[in-house]
Image (cartoon, rainbow, N blue to C red):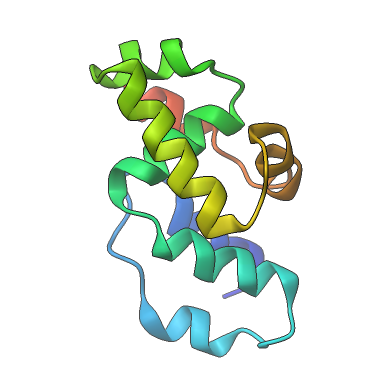
Length: 109
């Protein structure tokens, strides 16, 4: 299975639980492998918030879509930024700009 197909399989909802060997198989010095390891460190809800953020949703829109408080979204975003070692949503979006999150929008409707 190609790396791109593996990545799509991991990120496409509904998704199976992360496969531990998939990240081990990737080279340790590969920046994409680092992104995938960081992605797996996120909780399910943090992954949802990150995906919607990467799709361009504002915090309030994410809160409405997930039926959670705006403050909860902000808290999740702070955790996500910390886990990805970025300082803004824009930086997170740039880091994951080549990932396809389009299925997440449909999955969460």
